[in-house]
Length: 566
Image 1 (cartoon, rainbow, N blue to C red):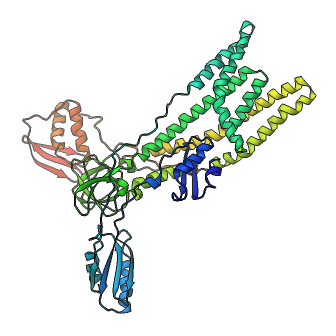
Image 2: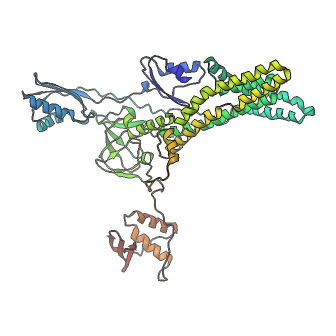
Image 3: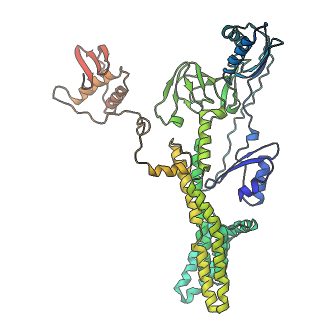
């Protein structure tokens, strides 16, 4: 239904629907049709749509490219061909395009001055090509760098109640009361309370059913509306109330499942940095800008606890970076000069670092991760497609069969007609394909979202199905199956020469100076047992023994700590 509404609109080139999380991704020309107009068209059909993200409102990355011109002395055709070959191999983040006018001895280059300046280009052409190039005009000198300001406002997310609607609760309450009529006798009149239950439960179902019928289609809402109205017509008010309430309850359960899937996706989207501390290319002052506006080659300052806005290279300082959001590794990674860092990771160290960006925010690792998850959830498996195709044919057949059962038998008398009408209504309820239509995509999206939250990306339901045929799985243990942190679990003392406390004192003293990953675990193990290093202890000749352990002299006593080799 959504595709039939959106695809005919001029300017729409693609529609991707995530049924379970109720998200629609639309590729469109904003100059022809706006996101709000598409939203309005959907709302005219009662979908209750709202614009979650409009790409046309994005500030976009500030272009850092400028046009510089050069002149060179007359040269041979082979040298010009060599110049062309050299410029073609320069990465696109440095040189976007160029034009060589051999007859006029003139060269025009569109380049990124933040990465490679006009002077640098001139020098490299002279050194690597052998053509003396002189800068006629440097595009960076007249460039005005204008960056949008970060508004600093948090995007307010709509809070959706996890409790069911009051109308559903009232519908269930009055249905239970109507069931007391089955006792008989003076209680039989309570069956009319079922009409109150229907009055609370049926309207939302009927509204959606009417909108579907207006598009000449059938869905589960239509079947439930037919069954409820038929039961009321036969004065089976208990059954009518049961259908209205239980279907409304199932919709609430479906909402809870989809809401969990949406929250999982939102948690991944929140990894994307919102703003960056940019060093202005001209004034060299630090300004706060949206992360999406940071150009390639710009310098950004990443302070303690800040997210790195874009992929880049550390050009100043060193810090510990928490990459668990991307790699799943729980242990932070030390980053030094010229090391690569990824956007969306966090500076978990005690000092700031300067990063020169190599990609824009939209092309960073975390943005690619988000796109992969969104595409995976909208990528339907063969099973989902089969269920959807089956339901499109199956539902009209069920409606037609039930209609025949509810009408034709009346020609053989009132009693037979009533009996077959009841069976027709039962067929509408029990043959409703909503369990297949709802449960299949919910199962896939719940699985994809749950794995994504735990750092595992599966590219769609088809690949999730394929996991069922896997016999063996190989893992990178540290940080995946383990936390990557050692702990002292058991200490066995051999002999009677030293007590447990004395052994832990020696261990703590020897290991607190060691750099081995197990050293800190032993020190922490001693502290956990309340053992502290005596002030009278002193150590000398503390030596690291590669592949074996450590040795030292404590108060004149030779002490060794290590493995079996030692």
